[in-house]
Length: 488
Image 1 (tube, helix red, strand yellow):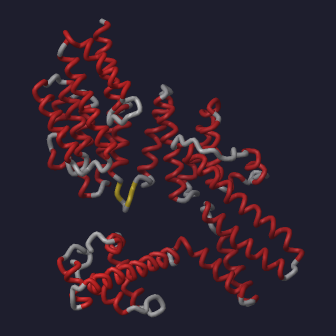
Image 2: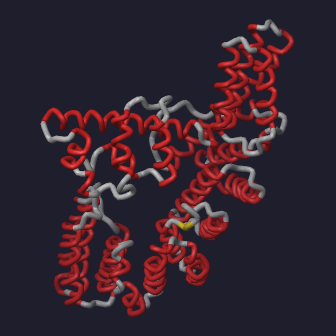
Image 3: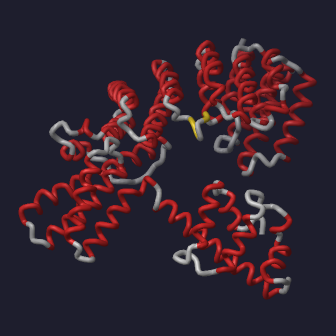
């Protein structure tokens, strides 16, 4: 009962949505089952607490059917399934009535008016909708989809009216919006495939075709299309990537400042940009490092890393780590001081301690880092595995033999027992990391057998070449350090 699909859906509803669900179920237009309404009202007595004893299977059957027979248990399952179906209908209704679907509702109204041959009303609504769409500034894929649907409906209307004078122009509008909608999505998902390094067999994007469709200098009229086009060039023309990125960045910042792109598209653009810059930086092109930090600042200032008006902790953590790896310690210090207050209150203090611990760690101020990392009561609610990983690295760097050995075993036990690691692959990644770190420490502290241990580690790394290791780069860095000692 508590883990049923019905309860899983209801847990996602806000208080306002749950109350409106009640209104939905009381309407005979949507629900004609009094038993479904009765079950909803039983749930409403304890909402939002859905694990109350009164909602146990036995208690619910007693209240709904006055008994506990097998037949009534089956009836409860059927009733819950029926109510789940109504809740799903409510979710669909919610989406349909949302602000985002305003123009789609207008399209359906136009279609219905045309089917009922209410020509005068159709013309009035179409004229109003056309004027409304023309005023939209953020012309994203939803805009082009809506324009295509509306214009292709009106094209059919003009055909039926035999309005030959309007058909050519109307068909041009239909094709333009269809082509633009298609190409915008084609470019968008091509960028996604490049971003995720997916090998997807697809028809190559024809840049000349795009230029033809948005000819006569109209490309700048559609910012999203323009930027996705540049992203496509950015990921496909390596020899010109600096030129393309410079133009992309200029336009991205311009459209950010004048609010010319929807938040969803804007967030996508910044994600593409930061991933591209990070890849270039990792290949050794340090010119992109400053771009990464500037992009993060723009995202912070425009709340593109926020959810419910608070910075998402994972994004904040990534910003801090990238800045520290770049050795921009003053920049990271500024970010921590200025933006920590924008993290949700229940994560704010743990994130502050974690960020400060990292800030000291990357500057090799290990005692100061330990002071922050030892606040396990705060940090284990946020990043228990990261905290332990960095503690292991500190004990390794400071040659704390007894502490390191004891800690690796406690870390290993935590990995095997924790519920934070949902997949066995992730669990194995941490266990591989701990095992290799232990061997590295032995090689570091036992010079006489160092060469043999290094060979064993190299053989192990070769075996794990395609297997997960949670901090593979650190393992490789420390292995290379030991090999350099051996050469000297």
